[in-house]
Length: 237
Image (tube, rainbow, N blue to C red; front, side):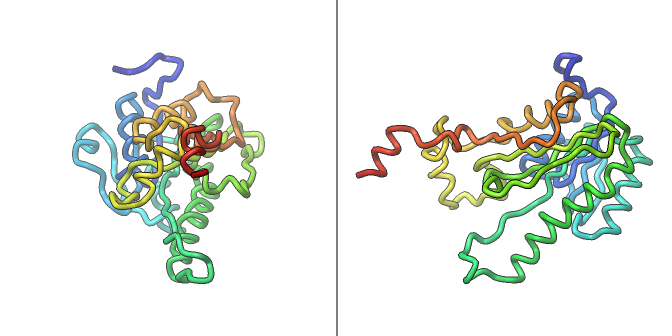
């Protein structure tokens, strides 16, 4: 059942990168459920159920400029000028200290997280309606040096970021330490599920967030609010 018309995505053309798994898949499913016309841009296809529900899949490597340009052109031709872009394609590093880091891994992270985002922000607005919305997936890990966002030169296109804490997705291996630590790192005492994120993307891509731009929306279960007293007590022992 669709939500209130105030948050309606009915017939809105929305382009979602990294939409075949994890948060991107959850967001794609929500947009489809809300009646949006969705193009999923990913290296891998989404589940057949999403395609059966009406999503269009384009195989795209967002680190390749020409592929991004081509995908945006094909998306506009297929579903119309875009009202929303959700850029979810990204990946973490290997967690090693910089002195022990692998330059090839670092290059891959920079190419995807930096250049992929750059290409979407550079070429995406040319395929958007005025008054549209761009939502980037960031991370609380990036808030120590957070770069600014901006409005697209008076066109009313907003640009915001969603910064999740640890989320249970295919990107987080079952054996990763964050699966156990998340309950201590967040005030809510658990790791985030994909469903905890998709409502935020829904709000930010809808017209109800039309006066929000240049913001990072933190969805971390209270991680940045500090440790709970019981956790601090255990750490002090």
